[in-house]
Amino acid sequence: MATDSSTKPKQNPKKANLLDHHSLKHILDESAIEVVKARGYVEDVRLSNVRLLMGTIIIIIALVAQFYPKKFPDNRNFLIGCIILYIVFNALLQLIIYTKEKNAIMFTYPPPGSFNTTGLVLSSKLPRFSDMYTLTIESADPKSISANKPVELTKSVTKWFTKDGVLVEGLFWKDVEGLIDEYNKEPKKSK
Image 1 (cartoon, rainbow, N blue to C red):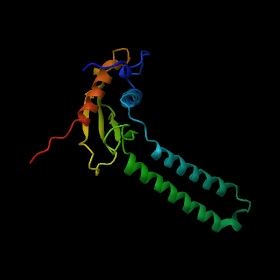
Image 2 (spheres, helix red, strand yellow):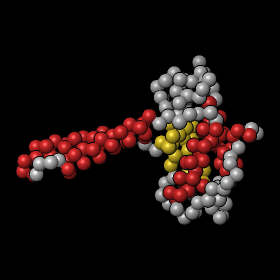
Image 3 (cartoon, rainbow, N blue to C red):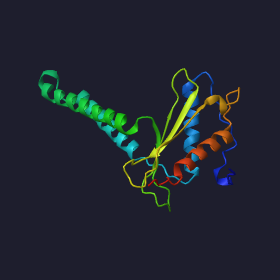
Image 4 (cartoon, one colour):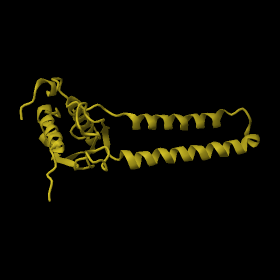
């Protein structure tokens, strides 16, 4: 598949420590996000904003509890209330992360001008002590009528990195673009 100049990777090489799987995953995740954005998808940061707001509320609760003007015996009920609020908001934050985010690295809006009413969820996995990187594209709203089936790409990271740890972006971009094309294919109707 030939790509036009708008989807070609940048020329500054990305280098990773081949012995650090977090470094490898980070570079691959960032590059996958670049590919998706280059294809016209706009990142949806609403969930990140909700997480930041909840984190800010948690910090404010902790600060108010710490610097409340009354001393301990007098502020016992207030402190108990702050501790309960702190626990509740932390539990809500963890619930959002566990149920909504999972392994997601990016949420998108539907591409402008498309008939899709749902964006994408890009998620990835690189298990510890493994070289197999899995990139998954699925619908942000799986129950939507315009949602396609999730697609997955699993390959060894050795296919995309040189022995010096430089990402061969052209190969990676080609694989991610192929995955996006596979996701966007019209599903075959069976009757």
